[in-house]
Image 1 (cartoon, rainbow, N blue to C red):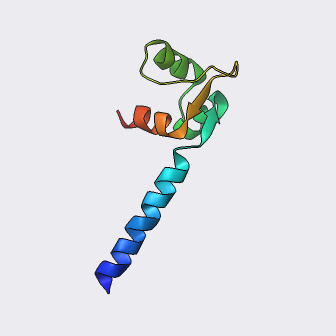
Image 2 (image 1 turned 135 degrees about the vertical axis):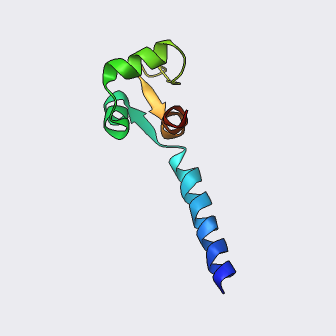
Image 3 (image 1 turned 45 degrees about the horizontal axis):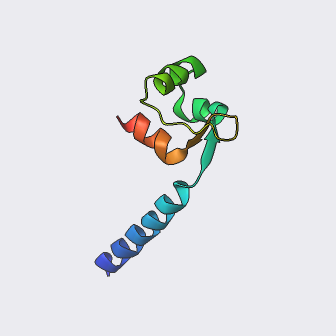
Length: 72
């Protein structure tokens, strides 16, 4: 019984993780999420530590990229 519940929870976590990887965030969102200043984020973008997409003319970040940056 316990292992069945644990397997179901792991499946739910995998589903949530895959859904969160498609979330796009603005610089303002990343500042709130990470509690870092915009200047700190800009420095890390310029040094290549934080991945950013500029295709739309705005700095957009995948939540996955931000999580990877914060984890390092």
